[in-house]
Image (spheres, rainbow, N blue to C red):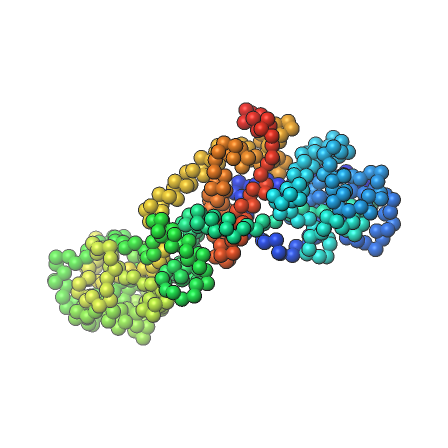
Length: 525
């Protein structure tokens, strides 16, 4: 006889806290499943399959990439010739026929009855077109799904336990809920409704998760070029560009980093911009200090201008190129005490040259200057000199205290920040209101079923309560699936093709179908 199945749990059947991953591959992807249990080996269409003729056999169904330890089993006893019938016929006559649930080993594995009902729902949804169900055969050396009209015998496998305790034949199916393509008109509607919010969350995600160094332009890659350049050049990502424009028109984002005032101090010292006694320092050596936007002054770069006190009458561009970032003068740096200074000089020179050439957008501010706009390179040094006085009196000198800022080029407005906060609160409220229905059973009505063993009734209950479930699914995805949506290097291509939107909408393929009576019972618990 075929072995008793392991405890069946179908992990994929729930809509997880976020909807199904937004990076789910399209249905054109070829998939080969190669699953085995630790105690046995399965072989597809072995040479000796005819030797099993006349014996009982099993139908095993696992979900997508769930292990076989979590599979569903239906023992077909007393009908060995059913293997000559179609796969559709044995699914509907045996495996997914709930009138035969008494033939399941439900005494040992009570969840089999619920899993059978669930698999039947997936199957019926696939047949009706409500879901995009593809059926594969484990171990089959083909990436194509099977056809329901194929005969069982075309796809039989053998399963042999390593200890020799069981050796039997089975139909080893894998159910895959694939991303369902959307009509172009429907897709365009969702882009119009949610595209600007998508870009708001994308911008927020990139700013929070960027691994870029302070000098890197965060939005310098191709998907943002059309929006930032405003040119009529051919746009590789026109739908992304339009969504960014819509986000800007909605007041959520703006191009360019907001102007800012810097107020940095070195521990144990005080810096003053354009102090009244600045003229008293005339004729003395002076320093050029450069820090990056978020760096402290402890990490700043210093160049001592020792023998040219009148260079303060020159332009800032002149002294940057003549002194501070002139690598031919690196011998004038205090590299004996601060060996990293030459490296900092080369790094800052790279940022400066990149900004001058237009490869990045460099803005230069002056620390302590009571203006939130960047300076001009043509400004004279004297216009922006400061003093630095150490509290212990050890140093008292003048300096040009510059701050380099590589502009992000896209920033979130106050209105955008408020919108993010509002949506996150809305999602948090919905999460708390419906999380108890994430894993339930209907017979008998039960809440708090261990993950993987129950149905997710949240969408169905939200719909019944007149919650806008489409909006909810999108907002949940923006927050709970942010890594899949926005962390994917190919996010822009997915947005253009509509794949990311289709994957979000796939959540509805997992929607439960309880009766109102069962829903009432669940709500009353």
